Amino acid sequence: MGVGSIASAIVTGLCEDVGEPPQVVLSPRGQTRSSDLAARFRTVTIASTNQEVVDQSDVVVLCVLPHQAEEVLGQLAFRETRGVVSAMAGVHLTVLQNLVFPARYIARSVPAPAVATRSSVTPIYPSTEAARDLYDRLGGRLELANELAYEAVSAASATVEAYFHYLGAIADWLTLHGVGGTDARRYVAATFSNLSEEMDTTDVDFSALARAHTTEGGLNEQFAKHLTSKGALTAVGEGLDAVLARLSRT
Image (tube, rainbow, N blue to C red; front, top):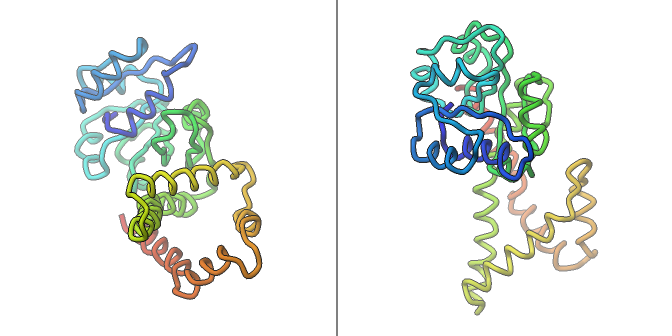
């Protein structure tokens, strides 16, 4: 419900290059994206109202903007046995329970755009059958034990922009030292893309990877020590604490 970029990614992951894609009923909200998805995938249809989405779906996925949640969901009638999976950041479980009452099977999730290619692991809390089934189709799920752990993972997802700024700073530094802008960005992108392939997402050890790329007294060690001495790594934790505090207040 609500058809923005994340909803589009979910639908794409469920339907693209899949032998038996599920039936998907889209909200009339976000007409352009809804029409595009319905044209691309034979099992996707567009409802005339949001209530029709709820009535025709075994699992309702909530993708509306958080500040629109009460306005949109407060007008709808849910059934007790309806599975509800929220992809709305910062809308706590107790709030969701009130908004979709009397529905009892409610989960929160943090899907990333990579669900479109089924290459993402999506955090969920609590672990309901509807949430497990949905995200197992989209690359897998990370089941969290409580809402604090869930909020912490949500906070960690806020580091993506900073990551790209970090890569951009490296590329910008290269351009200041005679490397063309396109070549600098291509080199940085290739370097970090190749590094990402070394990570086993089932049991990754970041410290071991760091050691594997470090020679005692070498250049990698020098740069890492410089960032540490300037408090860059400490600032990561402080920034995450601030994001988590904001999420806890909403």
